Image 1: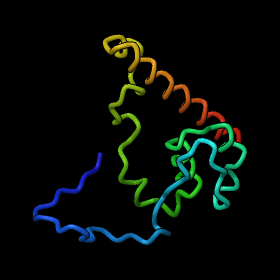
Image 2: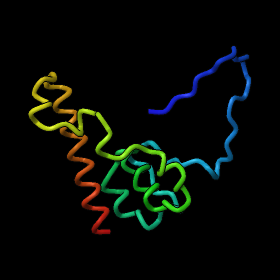
Image 3: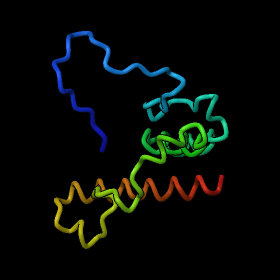
Image 4: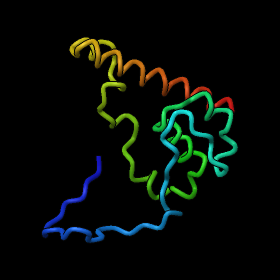
Length: 119
């Protein structure tokens, strides 16, 4: 992950970072949110994949030229150490609720990627 470390006290209401809205990558978080006009090429895909994290990833792919500096600083997929990236052998050491959640995330990601490649 990324973080910011403050080396001095922060005053209430003090602005730490200012970023123009046009520089932000965001998507509506509600699963039933309509596809934004700027992402119209993803409209059909959007309806089939309600996870906001997948929608944001697809938006970044669609507008990759615009977000290239951000994308270039992200870790490679192989460097991500999260349960949804683990093998079944590794998952067996976790409680069933976490294993089930990891499998669901992996399946949603695999399906969304395959579906996006078809679009």
